[in-house]
Length: 554
Image (cartoon, rainbow, N blue to C red; front, side):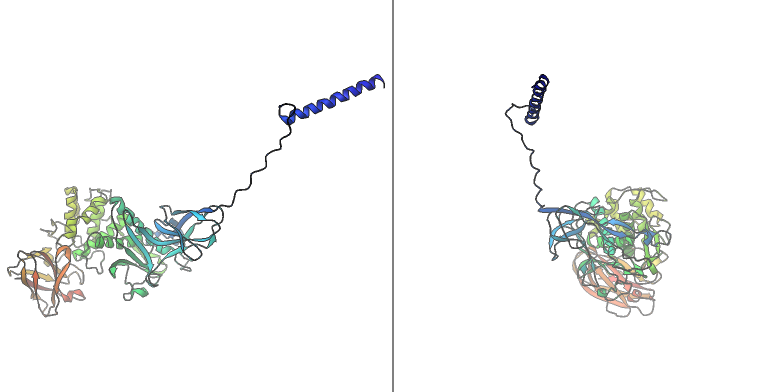
């Protein structure tokens, strides 16, 4: 072996040794020369399938607004609004309730800890329910289908293994020129107005409780009276059915639908408030702008109109009707220039109440008191239990006990040609063109001295000014008394009748025998004040007649 070969062999051996040392250093990461190579850890196992999930979403309905030029509905501007405060349930395949809640003010809901891989559906009821704090139970039902509660149901779908979102929208059903599918939005549009109604009062009185309220709505509800179970409701109205407070709302397409007429809904709800939370003495009946009404009717209808504008914060009361709901009418509740102003005008009443609430000074309006004193005046026990019937006089007297600016209230009254004072309207001079309508209350005593009263048809009949005359009777000593109403002038043949009321305008007794020209009854009366409504039966229907009477008690 030559010298070059020996040198090359040594170099190769040295290189091999260097490679071995280099590999060892990399493998042990700087440890001692005896360490071994460590393999990387295995990947983690996949997580187990979820045992529960959260299902959430938003519930909305189609709101059809007004065309403010025609006062009809504008379907081209339909928008989706949240279903607020409604009962929402998660149902299984057999429609059993898995979970229940209420929708938020944005229409949202969320159900947590729902079993994974379970078939479920979301169902929203047209019902507001609170059983703690401020209580209420308000349901929109189909009076032409056994009072079935309206519900909006989603599809039955597996809950899966991951959280998911399910939104529902109640559609209007409008197909472009007519309704072509279910009008699912209607009950929820009505319900949302009532949610606004309830929450507005809760802002004033967090402890207010609302008695149970049913709302009858159906596509069959039409403007003919008769059998409510087939939709013959006459008009949208408030009443009690089987003792249960009930709103009936029109739904007759191409004639008169009211489900999107928010002011109509709140107006009727205001009658419910009067009857159940405050007091209502109204005898009902038809009414309109410029009518000279029985003052109890004027008070109730003016209150309803004003509250619709206050609750909705919209001074324009609109009501749609006709073919395709494309026409209607409006009332500007803020307008103080009314026809036939006075204590017998619903427009005068609504003007005064609205001006007390609003923050805009106009005409004689210089007060801006908000809803609180209005609410407190209506719910004051003294107002609710007073013997005088509910008129603008008795309510303003209650309001004036709420520490309100007397001068400002007096200016509002004067602006509507109301000048009587106190709950009896003492000193009123505006007779509405019917002199016998004053004084508002005639006083009668138990000494047999006659009080002159009249029943006339000068402002039309049934529920108009001075169809009925009002008396107040003070009985100083309990005992048996004879009440007599006898004709003294007017129509030759009359049918006098009267009704006697005790505290809170609660019917006590009456006399309606049909006897000609005289009516007499003997009653056992306690020592207290009584309110008496006296009239000629002929003025409870058209054409009516004019007649006057002497009323005695002895």
